[in-house]
Image 1 (cartoon, rainbow, N blue to C red):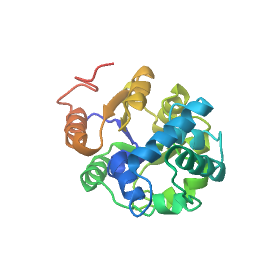
Image 2: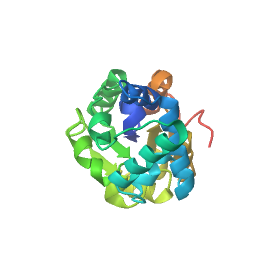
Image 3: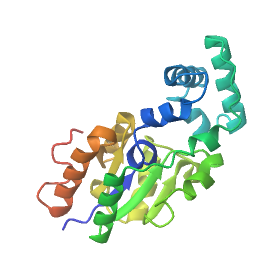
Length: 223
């Protein structure tokens, strides 16, 4: 067995795809998934951030100022009046997991792989994540952007994580649903694997082959 460190993303990999989470979040509201995504993009552009969540998890805005900007965007763009003061509660009420991915992580960990969680997360949401099924006892380590002061895809978060795993960069694997984060991992010398939704089965098969030694680390993954 080749010992590697598998760092799983949270939302979109350990859980159903992000788009599905957004769709569930919008159920029973007066706005659509497309509308809230467009509002988040506008806020990201205004604050010079790569995406709408980065505005929050980088600390550019605290949660209430962030949701306030979303409310104003919805009203100004779509004439939709919304109260998003309970955004986090509603967002985290979706507690579904990708059971195939959870089972694979457990199997790899039982076989001796280092299994970690790496997530870009605002400080206000740390408690929600800690209470999520499997997070408390399912990982050897958890690296959160709000705790370490850097976020994916920045190189520094990968340097911090590999120090915790105790393995050289090439034996650390980031599994993420965002191509930009996967690219950042590869630039840091890691293996980057795209997963989540329809890509989960192929990601599991690839990592299985790495662990068994039937494929070189990152074989077939462009850098």
